[in-house]
Length: 372
Image 1: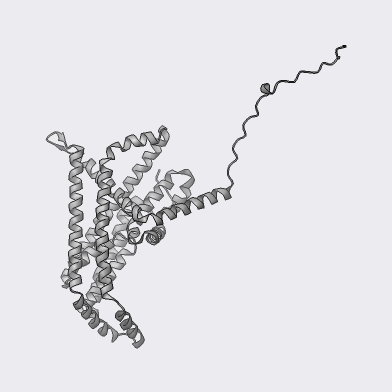
Image 2 (image 1 turned 180 degrees about the vertical axis):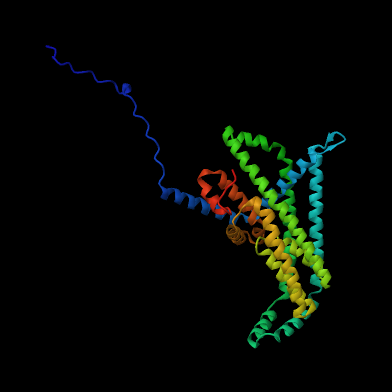
């Protein structure tokens, strides 16, 4: 057989063919990213609402553990006769102080509430007298509306609610202290767990930066807010003593706790003090004097001293704080009002260190400038 002039090249085997290069993954469209973010946000919101009975004490325990751990670190750093206190002993001492402080505050507050509950008939009678005197200064329709509103108040129901809230508060306090004790017991193994969870050095460094920033900012807010609230509560207590009010300790304690609620807590505390003054004295002039004194104190401490001390360190937008207050109070109730600012601090710091969420941190900040 004659060979062809132009030989036909042999076909390579299928195994000898070069594999095509892998295609680069296509980036997700903005619509898909937004949809995924909205779905993740909806799931997170559902978890926060449905799991609030578990999450609220856990968040409080994490904050308390962070503060106690800082106290333990400072205590072990002290030198006594050339020796440092063992970490276990320092932890035990700080936890005993925390438990004694919590029991003391709860006992004092319960005693003041019980004293006020025993005087409810006298308080109601004084309130009726003050209302009749106040009605003379108002129009007939407004006076009748106030009388109807006061008549509809069920004092017994309010007393039962207060007693139930005190019992729930005690159970929550015990749960928080229990969580805190176990978290402190396992604090020694936390660095090793982080090393096993975060394998690369860059990610571990980023994680440590976020954790240190959150701890510093939350500690700064809680410590300074506690000091300012304690000064405000003690000043209100002294003012009430000067005016001769019977419930001066209750007014000071109530002001201390309400001042932890940003923006609105001081207003609520001032209104309650003025209402008690109006009920107790029965004259509008005395109530206005209390309003002028306590209102001036709250204005100076809340609008000048507090922002001057805490605002420089946190640099958070006032509008964002108000939105955070309403958001957390809507899903976690009264506890959310106290946790709104610490939770916002955590969100802002995480958004600051995550490149894709840095725009959110800029919106939450006061001036738009974020710390490096």
